[in-house]
Amino acid sequence: MSAQRAHEPSGEHEPSGEHEPSGEQLARAWFEHSPLIRALGMRLGSISPDEATVALPYREELATAADVVHGGAIMSLLDTAAALAAWSAHDPSKGVRWGTVGVSVSFLASAQGSDLEATARVTRRGRSICFCSVDVSDSERTPVAEALVSYRLG
Image (cartoon, rainbow, N blue to C red; front, side, top):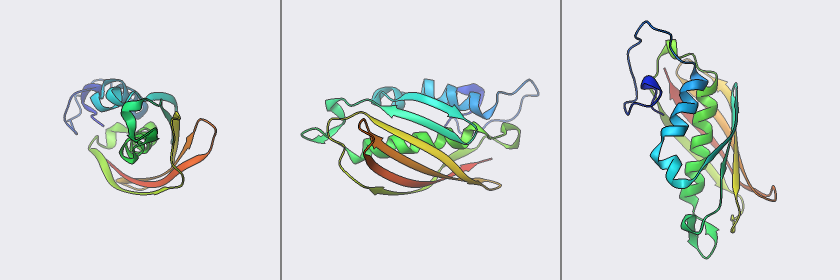
C-alpha cells in the first residue's frame, strides 16, 4: 500500500511536519487509487480498527475455467483485505514502510460464478509485523478460503 501523501507510488516517505493522515485514511486512499484493485473491481465493504471487509464482484474475466474464480483473484482479494486491516489502526508516525511478508492460504471450495467477500482481522500487532486472519466466502456464505497473512508496517 502506498502511503506517501495517500497515493504516491513509493512505499515510504519522510514526515513533513504537517498534519499526517491516519492509518485508516492512508488505507482508504490506497484502496481508491490502486490500479489492480480497480482492474479487479474490488469494493470496500467496511474498515474499522483491526478489521476490514472487501468484496470482489464476479465477472467472467476472473474465471480460470468455466465460471470458477481464479485462485490468483482470490489471493489478491484476501491480501487486499489484510493490508486494509493492518493499516486501519496503524500509527503512521511510526513509519509508513509496508508490504506483505507472507501468506498461507487454504482453498476450501471452488467459487463458482459468485461474488466473494473477504473479512480480515488483525490477530497480533508486533513492532513491525502485523498478523492477520482472513476468511473468504461466496454470496451464499459458503467458506471459499482462509488465510494467515503477515504484513510489515513501520
